[in-house]
Length: 583
Image 1 (cartoon, rainbow, N blue to C red):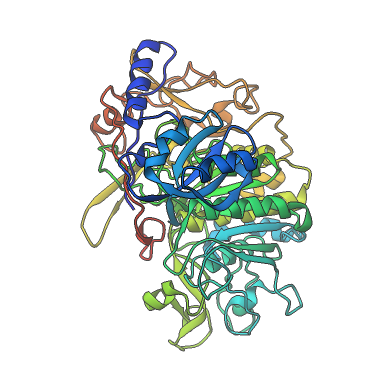
Image 2 (image 1 turned 60 degrees about the vertical axis):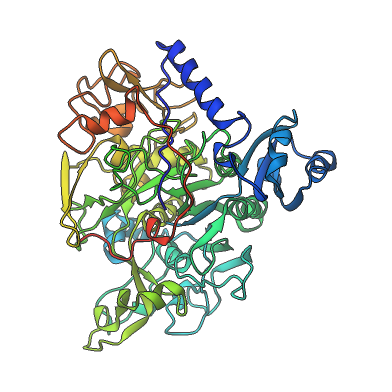
């Protein structure tokens, strides 16, 4: 998958005229402010998501049907529906005052030993916290939760029982697999969140692969097929289902280890509107940032590559760290493939936090296309069993990416909510960000052994967010926030050639010293003055380059020639699933 570099010039109160020009130009390009520009030039039948200005009734639905449309799915969560209709009818439909926005029903794809130690999960376990009575909805490629021994999925059984902790299953994929994992991604994600390590526990084992919240319940909502592909509408209806089931199963967290390029502002993107609805319903939404941190196709050195819906300011967006093969986090480094902010179009400061995601060992989905295609990534039994058996394990598989980092944070959120059930999604996000570990180097490099290319990462707010997840610190903290933990917007000041946080009266970050910007993001996020005042301390100055020693990336991201780019089709698994991680 290639990212559309849909980057607007930064909005500035000091430059209203310039912004007006940019806005008018962008609307002219899109044809209609209520229709996504990647619908321009389409012909024949198209699958779209229509969002209405209010919850649609039969009258609004009939308006689409009258134009040759067919309703495929009701998407009440975003006040809309998924339709198939002639492309020639789109402009007329967009002109209807009841229509808020039309976008394609786009394709998207899916993006514990050392991980648990690095984020101090063992502290939670020592306190008896294991996620009990909390449910996490895994919206992914399904979960292979067979209770057969030696399949690895026994790790998802209840404690001292053969019953599965997958308490609900539903699929929106039209194949014979049902809710089982025909890909191999969702099961791996579920294991990072909830695996209890039963297939690697005992005197004969030298390593135990246990998830972050090893007794949490799971809700299996399958939206990705055997190739790891799905659609916006299937993800939206899965989120809708999680919201509907929230009280029945105590769903407090949704994990989305998937994404697709950003095509429009989060304020109209239907995926973003869906995750915001879940957030408003009281669910913590955790999303993988994406794996395009090496993408320099737009000259930004991998910045502005965060995917949707990770670009939404209300979710917790997670980047990937490398555990470097050791339990301690002191030597851990950022994975160069981890997508970086700010987000395209809106310039939201992302990711929010980072967690281990590289070379993660978790549950294997036997028969899934990933382990079948890459048998070398199936862990040999000798890797964790006290013996010389080189036979591949039926239980465990290795994957890398922000898709693997997100469930670490989902598991952490479940532990925090078990300890303090009354915490709101905002309080969970704020607590995890403020207590995150912030002792990083200024930069690090990685040489790709295949290409010989060196990738250099800077440890700024657009790369590591507020820092490295620290579960012990989060559980030990008693800080309670009282506002929205909305990720801030970054703004470029051409007078000083610097980038600043934009003050937002609805967010908690600027309200007090406790939640001030330097308290949450730390000094490494800033260049120059270390004042916590919003808009007065430069987050990035001209001396802080975008991953290189030149101003090329900085100019490409913030300069007057910032690109809108052109739409691109969603690609394959390599963007969101990394088979070969970084050493």
